[in-house]
Length: 505
Image (cartoon, rainbow, N blue to C red):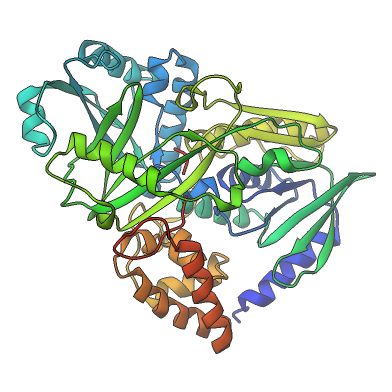
């Protein structure tokens, strides 16, 4: 007998509160998802709460890259590059549907002292070696004629040549969701739209949480708490996190306007931006600026979009992109653990795990590519601190065990959006915790970002979700209004007046 999503959610809320947990994770982004999977696979009784939807923040707003970070190698951060290079290979092994090998062409030009061809030639070979010689593809270099042949639309004046190297392409929100689906298979209790309010250390940590759908307050007892809230991490009462938050935006245009066979690296001084092929679209970005506003209100503004378009037009002069050519965009925040001095683009993507109070754990910094390692290191420390070895004997297996079996992936999860149909929407509502229209349009499918007629598709999805979740006509109208508000871009005139969005590569 099929259980309704509402009944299943009520059962999870009861399970969250009926007996003490070993670990309660606050935050349903990629780090929280990784910790939930690892902890549950080792046998810890695990719960996770997210105040909005899973992957709502940084984890659905990135460049969608799994990468070691060639620019970090240029900064001398060899350890960080090796760590991420190994992890991108692991993700390719455990989730090949979300880790497609992606070649990058990095052109160099005479007069650019920051990116010199002979230095990049050495750099990409070191890059391959830091993957233990098993990168997702072998790096090479191209002379001027070869670059012109491969990317005819690229600016030719003063072109020297290019290097070609490999990283991975993912779907960031899908990686979160599939990691959570894997965690649930190992009995983790996962709830979106449940807001953490407070915590008091007693015999157990007693945490007050609020169901955002009913406004009911619940008490969760847990032996340990993990703060994995990304840009919100320094706002929790027991947190010792000190962040430097930076904003980045991406825009989506038709592939034919910026026709790139591989990802092309575009530079401005030391900074690098990307033109990333995404099916029939090209993703352009990103910016990197300090941000001090409300993490819930981050958005792309006209200056951000003009900056990305300007750089792209320099490298692809035939594109002549204007704001009206933008199909969609997203903007989000990078929660960096860093010194307040220095340029945002120079800040390290290393991570920190600290315990400012007994059995309270802050996990901050890092990046999408290293989420699994961050989770492993955190759960190692939690297990030691809790001294649960007597009943938890399983080692970490997250680097060996696939996220999901193939039959649970096909048609629902990949680097490209799924086909637009009711069957997919039904899956997201019954198997992937989708409760609002934007949950499906933005994070489960990326239909909003990919399709020019996203507004019309949203109307159809609202009809399907209304039938599946028993919405009244008033609720359907409220969902469409919520979606339009979340995805509106009033400061820029684009073809479809849609797009909130998201970042953080």
